[in-house]
Length: 388
Picture (cartoon, helix red, strand yellow):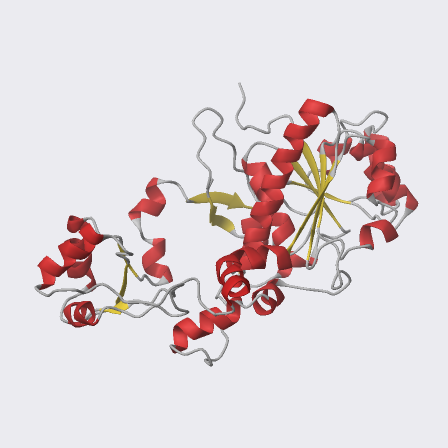
Protein backbone atom coordinates (compact mmCIF):
# COMPACT_ATOMS: atom_id res chain seq x y z
CA UNK A 1 0.00 0.00 0.00
CA UNK A 2 1.33 3.44 -0.93
CA UNK A 3 1.51 6.02 1.83
CA UNK A 4 2.42 8.90 -0.50
CA UNK A 5 2.34 9.69 -4.21
CA UNK A 6 6.15 9.72 -4.30
CA UNK A 7 6.85 6.63 -2.17
CA UNK A 8 9.36 5.17 -4.63
CA UNK A 9 11.21 8.44 -5.30
CA UNK A 10 14.64 9.22 -3.80
CA UNK A 11 15.89 12.81 -3.58
CA UNK A 12 19.44 13.85 -2.71
CA UNK A 13 19.19 17.28 -1.11
CA UNK A 14 22.14 19.67 -1.22
CA UNK A 15 20.23 22.65 0.09
CA UNK A 16 20.40 25.17 2.92
CA UNK A 17 18.36 28.06 4.27
CA UNK A 18 14.71 27.97 3.25
CA UNK A 19 13.60 27.83 -0.41
CA UNK A 20 15.53 24.65 -1.26
CA UNK A 21 14.90 22.75 2.00
CA UNK A 22 11.21 23.65 1.93
CA UNK A 23 10.94 22.12 -1.55
CA UNK A 24 12.58 18.98 -0.13
CA UNK A 25 10.13 19.06 2.78
CA UNK A 26 7.17 19.09 0.38
CA UNK A 27 8.56 16.17 -1.62
CA UNK A 28 9.10 14.29 1.64
CA UNK A 29 5.53 15.08 2.73
CA UNK A 30 4.31 13.42 -0.48
CA UNK A 31 6.24 10.26 0.31
CA UNK A 32 9.68 10.77 -1.25
CA UNK A 33 12.77 9.58 0.60
CA UNK A 34 14.72 12.82 0.95
CA UNK A 35 18.34 12.28 1.93
CA UNK A 36 19.76 15.52 3.28
CA UNK A 37 23.49 15.62 2.55
CA UNK A 38 25.08 17.90 5.13
CA UNK A 39 28.63 19.01 5.68
CA UNK A 40 30.58 17.28 8.43
CA UNK A 41 29.06 18.23 11.79
CA UNK A 42 25.78 19.28 10.22
CA UNK A 43 24.72 22.39 8.32
CA UNK A 44 24.99 25.84 9.87
CA UNK A 45 21.21 26.33 9.87
CA UNK A 46 20.93 23.86 12.72
CA UNK A 47 21.87 26.85 14.90
CA UNK A 48 19.55 29.35 13.22
CA UNK A 49 17.29 31.30 15.58
CA UNK A 50 14.79 30.95 17.10
CA UNK A 51 16.17 28.13 19.25
CA UNK A 52 14.15 26.00 21.68
CA UNK A 53 16.02 23.80 24.16
CA UNK A 54 19.01 23.45 21.86
CA UNK A 55 17.02 22.90 18.66
CA UNK A 56 16.44 25.36 15.82
CA UNK A 57 12.76 25.84 15.04
CA UNK A 58 13.83 27.16 11.62
CA UNK A 59 15.77 23.97 10.82
CA UNK A 60 13.12 21.69 12.34
CA UNK A 61 10.23 23.11 10.33
CA UNK A 62 11.90 22.61 6.94
CA UNK A 63 13.76 19.37 7.57
CA UNK A 64 11.42 17.12 9.55
CA UNK A 65 10.91 13.75 7.94
CA UNK A 66 14.23 13.75 6.03
CA UNK A 67 17.20 11.42 6.43
CA UNK A 68 20.56 12.98 7.25
CA UNK A 69 24.02 11.90 6.21
CA UNK A 70 27.14 14.01 6.70
CA UNK A 71 29.54 13.86 3.76
CA UNK A 72 32.70 15.82 2.91
CA UNK A 73 32.18 16.71 -0.74
CA UNK A 74 35.46 18.61 -0.86
CA UNK A 75 37.33 15.31 -0.95
CA UNK A 76 37.44 12.91 -3.90
CA UNK A 77 36.41 10.03 -1.63
CA UNK A 78 33.36 12.04 -0.58
CA UNK A 79 32.43 12.74 -4.20
CA UNK A 80 32.77 9.01 -4.92
CA UNK A 81 30.24 8.26 -2.18
CA UNK A 82 27.91 10.91 -3.60
CA UNK A 83 28.06 9.39 -7.09
CA UNK A 84 27.34 5.93 -5.68
CA UNK A 85 24.25 7.42 -4.01
CA UNK A 86 23.36 9.22 -7.24
CA UNK A 87 22.98 5.89 -9.02
CA UNK A 88 20.01 5.15 -6.73
CA UNK A 89 18.41 8.63 -6.91
CA UNK A 90 15.66 10.20 -8.98
CA UNK A 91 16.37 13.83 -8.18
CA UNK A 92 19.10 16.12 -6.90
CA UNK A 93 17.98 19.34 -5.19
CA UNK A 94 20.47 22.19 -4.75
CA UNK A 95 20.34 25.90 -3.94
CA UNK A 96 23.94 27.05 -4.30
CA UNK A 97 24.85 30.17 -6.21
CA UNK A 98 24.92 29.34 -9.95
CA UNK A 99 28.23 27.77 -10.95
CA UNK A 100 29.03 26.41 -7.49
CA UNK A 101 27.86 22.90 -8.27
CA UNK A 102 30.05 22.90 -11.38
CA UNK A 103 33.06 24.06 -9.34
CA UNK A 104 32.45 21.14 -6.99
CA UNK A 105 32.55 18.73 -9.93
CA UNK A 106 28.86 17.94 -9.50
CA UNK A 107 27.33 19.86 -12.40
CA UNK A 108 24.53 18.45 -14.53
CA UNK A 109 26.91 17.18 -17.22
CA UNK A 110 28.78 15.19 -14.57
CA UNK A 111 25.57 13.90 -12.99
CA UNK A 112 24.14 12.51 -16.23
CA UNK A 113 27.32 10.55 -16.87
CA UNK A 114 26.40 8.52 -13.80
CA UNK A 115 22.57 8.76 -13.90
CA UNK A 116 21.37 9.78 -17.38
CA UNK A 117 17.73 10.30 -16.33
CA UNK A 118 18.44 12.34 -13.19
CA UNK A 119 16.27 15.39 -12.51
CA UNK A 120 18.29 18.34 -11.18
CA UNK A 121 16.27 20.96 -9.27
CA UNK A 122 18.19 24.24 -9.10
CA UNK A 123 17.00 26.97 -6.75
CA UNK A 124 18.86 30.30 -6.75
CA UNK A 125 18.48 34.03 -6.26
CA UNK A 126 18.37 35.21 -9.87
CA UNK A 127 18.37 32.02 -11.92
CA UNK A 128 20.94 30.06 -13.90
CA UNK A 129 21.13 32.78 -16.58
CA UNK A 130 20.49 36.51 -16.83
CA UNK A 131 22.49 39.66 -15.98
CA UNK A 132 22.15 39.15 -12.20
CA UNK A 133 23.00 35.42 -12.29
CA UNK A 134 26.13 35.61 -10.13
CA UNK A 135 24.77 37.92 -7.43
CA UNK A 136 23.92 36.57 -3.98
CA UNK A 137 20.30 36.98 -2.94
CA UNK A 138 17.89 36.28 -0.13
CA UNK A 139 14.13 36.71 0.20
CA UNK A 140 14.32 40.46 0.83
CA UNK A 141 16.09 41.07 -2.49
CA UNK A 142 13.15 39.50 -4.32
CA UNK A 143 10.62 41.60 -2.44
CA UNK A 144 12.67 44.74 -3.06
CA UNK A 145 13.53 44.53 -6.74
CA UNK A 146 10.10 43.60 -8.06
CA UNK A 147 8.19 46.37 -6.32
CA UNK A 148 6.46 44.28 -3.67
CA UNK A 149 7.93 46.31 -0.79
CA UNK A 150 6.71 49.50 -2.43
CA UNK A 151 3.18 48.16 -2.76
CA UNK A 152 3.12 46.85 0.81
CA UNK A 153 4.43 50.15 2.20
CA UNK A 154 1.88 52.12 0.19
CA UNK A 155 -0.93 49.99 1.58
CA UNK A 156 0.25 50.50 5.14
CA UNK A 157 1.07 54.18 4.80
CA UNK A 158 -1.91 55.08 2.65
CA UNK A 159 0.22 56.95 0.11
CA UNK A 160 2.49 56.08 -2.79
CA UNK A 161 5.54 57.71 -1.20
CA UNK A 162 5.25 55.69 2.01
CA UNK A 163 8.28 53.87 3.39
CA UNK A 164 8.70 50.48 1.65
CA UNK A 165 7.91 47.53 3.92
CA UNK A 166 8.80 43.85 3.61
CA UNK A 167 6.61 41.04 4.85
CA UNK A 168 7.22 39.64 8.32
CA UNK A 169 8.13 36.24 6.84
CA UNK A 170 10.08 34.97 3.83
CA UNK A 171 7.25 35.11 1.33
CA UNK A 172 9.42 34.84 -1.77
CA UNK A 173 11.41 31.88 -0.40
CA UNK A 174 8.25 29.95 0.30
CA UNK A 175 6.69 30.70 -3.06
CA UNK A 176 9.92 29.65 -4.78
CA UNK A 177 9.80 26.33 -2.92
CA UNK A 178 6.31 25.74 -4.33
CA UNK A 179 7.50 26.41 -7.87
CA UNK A 180 10.42 24.02 -7.36
CA UNK A 181 8.21 21.24 -6.02
CA UNK A 182 5.64 21.68 -8.81
CA UNK A 183 8.43 21.59 -11.37
CA UNK A 184 9.85 18.45 -9.77
CA UNK A 185 6.64 16.42 -9.98
CA UNK A 186 6.01 17.65 -13.54
CA UNK A 187 9.53 16.55 -14.52
CA UNK A 188 8.84 13.14 -12.99
CA UNK A 189 5.77 12.81 -15.19
CA UNK A 190 7.84 13.74 -18.25
CA UNK A 191 10.51 11.20 -17.29
CA UNK A 192 7.89 8.48 -16.86
CA UNK A 193 6.65 9.14 -20.41
CA UNK A 194 10.01 9.62 -22.15
CA UNK A 195 12.77 8.27 -19.90
CA UNK A 196 14.42 11.70 -19.95
CA UNK A 197 15.61 13.70 -16.98
CA UNK A 198 16.11 17.46 -17.12
CA UNK A 199 17.14 20.60 -15.23
CA UNK A 200 14.59 22.72 -13.36
CA UNK A 201 15.61 26.36 -12.90
CA UNK A 202 13.60 28.39 -10.35
CA UNK A 203 14.68 31.55 -8.57
CA UNK A 204 13.59 34.17 -6.06
CA UNK A 205 13.47 36.96 -8.65
CA UNK A 206 11.02 35.08 -10.88
CA UNK A 207 8.86 34.06 -7.92
CA UNK A 208 8.73 37.64 -6.65
CA UNK A 209 7.52 38.78 -10.06
CA UNK A 210 4.49 36.46 -9.80
CA UNK A 211 3.38 38.52 -6.78
CA UNK A 212 3.27 41.75 -8.78
CA UNK A 213 2.34 40.30 -12.18
CA UNK A 214 -1.00 42.17 -12.34
CA UNK A 215 0.33 45.67 -11.47
CA UNK A 216 3.33 45.27 -13.81
CA UNK A 217 1.23 43.98 -16.70
CA UNK A 218 -1.27 46.80 -16.13
CA UNK A 219 1.52 49.41 -16.07
CA UNK A 220 3.19 48.13 -19.24
CA UNK A 221 -0.15 48.17 -21.04
CA UNK A 222 -1.47 51.54 -19.82
CA UNK A 223 1.51 53.45 -18.43
CA UNK A 224 -0.41 53.83 -15.16
CA UNK A 225 0.24 52.44 -11.71
CA UNK A 226 -2.55 50.33 -10.30
CA UNK A 227 -4.09 47.00 -11.18
CA UNK A 228 -4.67 45.59 -7.71
CA UNK A 229 -6.10 47.19 -4.60
CA UNK A 230 -4.63 46.91 -1.16
CA UNK A 231 -6.29 45.05 1.65
CA UNK A 232 -6.98 47.54 4.37
CA UNK A 233 -8.58 46.32 7.60
CA UNK A 234 -11.46 47.77 9.59
CA UNK A 235 -11.01 48.72 13.23
CA UNK A 236 -13.40 47.30 15.81
CA UNK A 237 -13.81 48.30 19.45
CA UNK A 238 -11.31 45.62 20.53
CA UNK A 239 -9.20 44.81 17.47
CA UNK A 240 -9.12 44.64 13.71
CA UNK A 241 -11.03 42.71 11.06
CA UNK A 242 -10.85 42.19 7.29
CA UNK A 243 -14.03 42.47 5.19
CA UNK A 244 -14.14 41.86 1.46
CA UNK A 245 -17.34 42.31 -0.53
CA UNK A 246 -15.51 42.90 -3.81
CA UNK A 247 -17.89 43.98 -6.55
CA UNK A 248 -20.69 41.61 -5.54
CA UNK A 249 -24.04 43.44 -5.79
CA UNK A 250 -25.89 40.97 -3.57
CA UNK A 251 -23.28 41.25 -0.77
CA UNK A 252 -23.35 45.01 -1.12
CA UNK A 253 -27.14 44.99 -0.75
CA UNK A 254 -27.00 42.78 2.35
CA UNK A 255 -24.52 45.07 4.10
CA UNK A 256 -26.49 48.18 3.12
CA UNK A 257 -29.61 46.67 4.65
CA UNK A 258 -27.72 45.66 7.78
CA UNK A 259 -26.19 49.05 8.51
CA UNK A 260 -29.18 51.04 7.19
CA UNK A 261 -27.50 53.09 4.50
CA UNK A 262 -27.38 53.28 0.70
CA UNK A 263 -24.70 53.07 -2.00
CA UNK A 264 -21.71 51.85 -0.02
CA UNK A 265 -19.93 50.49 -3.11
CA UNK A 266 -16.37 51.75 -3.59
CA UNK A 267 -15.90 53.98 -6.61
CA UNK A 268 -12.43 53.27 -7.96
CA UNK A 269 -10.82 54.27 -11.26
CA UNK A 270 -10.21 51.64 -13.93
CA UNK A 271 -7.47 49.33 -12.75
CA UNK A 272 -8.22 49.88 -9.07
CA UNK A 273 -5.69 51.63 -6.87
CA UNK A 274 -2.58 50.75 -4.95
CA UNK A 275 -4.40 51.08 -1.64
CA UNK A 276 -8.10 50.41 -1.93
CA UNK A 277 -10.27 52.84 0.08
CA UNK A 278 -12.43 51.57 2.90
CA UNK A 279 -16.19 52.09 2.94
CA UNK A 280 -16.87 55.06 5.30
CA UNK A 281 -20.27 53.82 6.49
CA UNK A 282 -18.79 50.42 7.28
CA UNK A 283 -15.86 52.04 9.10
CA UNK A 284 -18.25 53.79 11.50
CA UNK A 285 -20.37 50.67 11.96
CA UNK A 286 -17.35 48.52 12.85
CA UNK A 287 -15.92 50.99 15.36
CA UNK A 288 -19.06 50.63 17.47
CA UNK A 289 -18.80 46.82 17.72
CA UNK A 290 -16.40 44.13 18.85
CA UNK A 291 -14.54 41.84 16.47
CA UNK A 292 -16.69 38.90 17.61
CA UNK A 293 -19.94 40.83 16.97
CA UNK A 294 -18.86 41.93 13.50
CA UNK A 295 -17.63 38.48 12.59
CA UNK A 296 -20.82 36.76 13.73
CA UNK A 297 -23.10 39.14 11.86
CA UNK A 298 -21.17 39.13 8.59
CA UNK A 299 -20.63 35.37 8.55
CA UNK A 300 -24.40 34.98 8.91
CA UNK A 301 -24.83 37.18 5.82
CA UNK A 302 -22.33 35.12 3.81
CA UNK A 303 -19.82 37.99 3.64
CA UNK A 304 -16.10 37.06 3.40
CA UNK A 305 -14.74 38.24 6.76
CA UNK A 306 -11.90 37.29 9.09
CA UNK A 307 -10.53 38.59 12.38
CA UNK A 308 -6.94 39.80 12.32
CA UNK A 309 -5.40 37.43 14.85
CA UNK A 310 -2.23 37.65 16.84
CA UNK A 311 0.14 34.69 16.58
CA UNK A 312 -1.14 33.24 19.91
CA UNK A 313 -4.73 33.59 18.67
CA UNK A 314 -3.87 31.94 15.35
CA UNK A 315 -2.08 29.09 17.14
CA UNK A 316 -5.25 28.41 19.17
CA UNK A 317 -7.58 28.37 16.16
CA UNK A 318 -9.56 25.09 16.22
CA UNK A 319 -9.68 24.96 12.41
CA UNK A 320 -5.87 24.74 12.33
CA UNK A 321 -5.90 21.78 14.71
CA UNK A 322 -8.87 20.02 13.12
CA UNK A 323 -7.00 19.98 9.81
CA UNK A 324 -3.78 18.86 11.54
CA UNK A 325 -1.76 21.78 10.27
CA UNK A 326 0.32 21.60 13.44
CA UNK A 327 1.56 18.29 14.79
CA UNK A 328 3.82 17.20 17.63
CA UNK A 329 7.04 15.29 17.02
CA UNK A 330 9.66 13.97 19.42
CA UNK A 331 13.04 15.64 19.13
CA UNK A 332 16.31 14.27 20.60
CA UNK A 333 17.39 17.76 21.67
CA UNK A 334 14.22 19.69 22.47
CA UNK A 335 11.92 16.86 23.51
CA UNK A 336 8.50 17.63 22.09
CA UNK A 337 8.24 20.09 19.19
CA UNK A 338 5.40 21.43 17.09
CA UNK A 339 6.05 21.30 13.34
CA UNK A 340 3.82 21.98 10.31
CA UNK A 341 1.46 19.23 9.23
CA UNK A 342 0.66 18.20 5.66
CA UNK A 343 -0.66 21.16 3.68
CA UNK A 344 -1.88 19.02 0.77
CA UNK A 345 -4.57 16.51 1.68
CA UNK A 346 -4.68 13.38 -0.53
CA UNK A 347 -7.60 10.98 -0.23
CA UNK A 348 -5.69 7.87 -1.37
CA UNK A 349 -2.06 8.66 -0.60
CA UNK A 350 -2.01 10.81 2.54
CA UNK A 351 1.76 11.25 2.73
CA UNK A 352 3.99 11.08 5.77
CA UNK A 353 5.61 13.09 8.50
CA UNK A 354 8.74 12.24 10.41
CA UNK A 355 11.02 13.57 13.15
CA UNK A 356 13.85 16.05 12.75
CA UNK A 357 17.08 14.15 11.98
CA UNK A 358 20.31 14.59 13.93
CA UNK A 359 23.52 15.18 11.91
CA UNK A 360 24.49 11.95 10.17
CA UNK A 361 21.72 9.99 11.87
CA UNK A 362 21.00 7.90 8.77
CA UNK A 363 24.51 7.51 7.32
CA UNK A 364 24.78 3.82 8.19
CA UNK A 365 21.20 3.10 7.09
CA UNK A 366 21.53 4.85 3.73
CA UNK A 367 25.05 3.79 2.77
CA UNK A 368 24.58 0.26 4.13
CA UNK A 369 22.05 -0.42 1.35
CA UNK A 370 24.53 0.43 -1.41
CA UNK A 371 26.48 -2.38 -3.10
CA UNK A 372 29.90 -2.99 -1.49
CA UNK A 373 29.22 -0.63 1.45
CA UNK A 374 29.50 -2.98 4.40
CA UNK A 375 29.99 -1.89 8.01
CA UNK A 376 33.78 -2.07 7.78
CA UNK A 377 33.90 0.22 4.74
CA UNK A 378 31.55 2.74 6.31
CA UNK A 379 33.61 2.73 9.53
CA UNK A 380 36.76 3.29 7.46
CA UNK A 381 35.09 6.30 5.80
CA UNK A 382 34.17 7.63 9.22
CA UNK A 383 37.72 7.31 10.54
CA UNK A 384 38.95 9.13 7.44
CA UNK A 385 36.36 11.86 8.13
CA UNK A 386 34.69 11.37 4.77
CA UNK A 387 31.33 10.61 6.36
CA UNK A 388 29.81 11.08 9.79
